[in-house]
Image 1 (cartoon, rainbow, N blue to C red):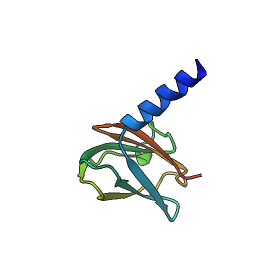
Image 2: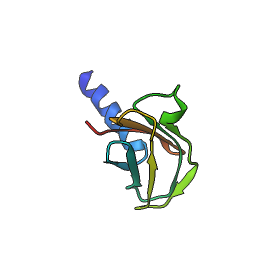
Image 3: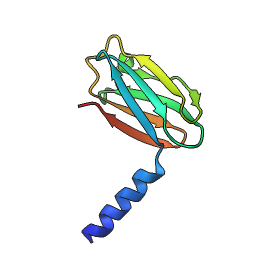
Image 4: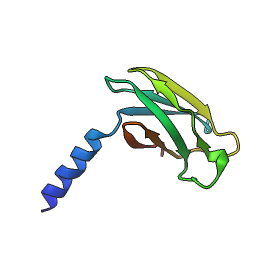
Length: 96
């Protein structure tokens, strides 16, 4: 049963968007599409702070394969993680 649960989790992870994240100077993040098809970034949430507008970016930007998007969360605490919502699903990037 445990093996089946792990297989399901791996399958779900493989279905989400292929993204890479880089943290620059504590508050700036760069998200790169490491997949083979374009995707649209709908929303980026820093530190799981959905209720704070200064910790949410809604760029609605299209990224081709290998392309990046950079944003800065000036008034949010130092960024430890981001949740990225795309038209292909969600991906969490942890910087700790």
